[in-house]
Image (tube, rainbow, N blue to C red; front, top):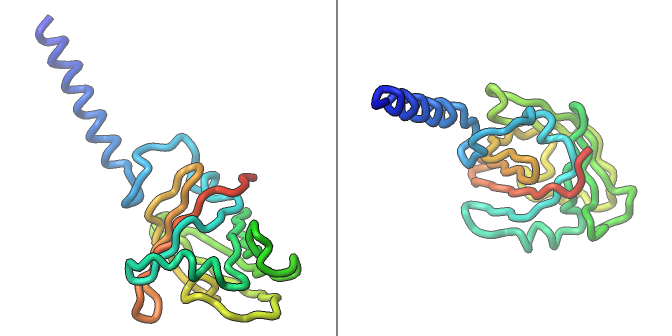
Length: 161
């Protein structure tokens, strides 16, 4: 009887250790039943944006074209955002791919159509690699260093595919 309790306790401890070692991203999740590609596909809206750990969300959302990211199967679109900061003809198109064993995402914009070409650091830059900090069904957190500054953007799922 004692040996079966010890066996179950050992099995439980090993399971926890194994699950913890599976954690891919700094801020989780611990475990997911969906693939990383499945979790990232959808339209994401900015919930939080910081530059050098300073909350710059209002600044970003105050830009005429802060927009959302829509991830398809390798395709990427930058949309005006739910508030429609410009006309629906304002958009970015490009590509994305995982890098560094799916711990980072490489975003490349190759087409930009807007009357306002302002971009906020790496947030609309032509070519940036972002470290993935969190990727769940409803949250995507990305971080990068760009031109000597640290950026963090937290997205919430707006619409999935």
